[in-house]
Length: 435
Figure (cartoon, rainbow, N blue to C red):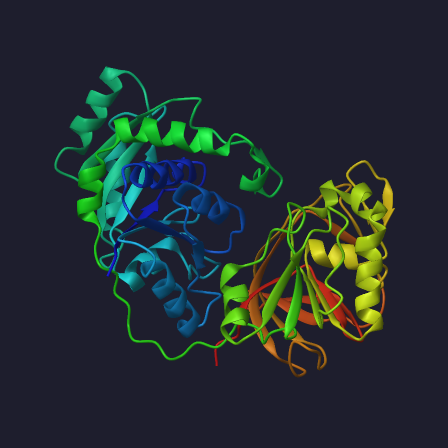
């Protein structure tokens, strides 16, 4: 069985994503069989992980996943390689409003050691108090070492090492380097598929970190994960159909692999197509899945792609299921208003209109139940997932698809829309509600 460890940080923007990618590429470049996982709901970082290792990256989420889904997904990750490196989310102990689902919870559940990435720019001996607090905060979390990020000149390194002496092993000193930066946009990093220089960046970052981190010492810290025997896992969602047309390009990239894997595992066939290239869903498909992504950045192009839009309408005419999440939901509506305020006609299959002008953040875990029986299940079928978008509804009529609440159970109100066998919402499904 593979050995693993978890890269975490005191907070977001500490550099853990770039350092995780650099470590993955550094180990891969020296010939190690390395795979990865990402804690929490995230579509963008796992695509970078996969590019760095050449192996699929999976999300692990203790709040949104049933125990069976979490265990089965962890087993899939472990089976791929000899070394597994996980990347945490936000700060080590940050979860939902009740603190559930944190990186620390995942480390404890899998009995994996934690390596803390510390952004030490503007910090000296005070780093010792920070490390001691994180080391001692939870007895079931093993802080096995630290990597110091954005280290200055030799004097800065000396101050840091002296302050940390005897507390935890210092595994590396990563310098401030413009080569360790990734461009961002409103939902996170610019997608891996959009970076023409991605291989060059990963190799450069891997080389910097290979010179700055003791890779052998880091690998020696890794342990076999604690994986309890799990019952057979069923898909998060029953397959939408037997032959599912899957929108797949830079405008529709936000589909969780564990969801798609579950469909394949029970015999569904996935038929990818590219709306951006004006491809319609396969005419033999009995279901169409439009995942989230960035349709708001390509609204004019999508509105002009008649084969794509007519293909969606033809699917509904033959009574195929059509399901859209977030960006896919926006495209199923009547119109989409872009950041400049220009309105673009969409598929007109759901009585909603959405806008990316005057953007406002919607972010967080969600519980949601169906308002009526649909292809997703019976009335009151319950799911867990998340919401992360800046677009907003400017018009909605008809029957909502879900009733939604936050992770603590605070009611948010109705969400999405359903008309016949067409449905969608801004919510991303991760799993069914645990029994």
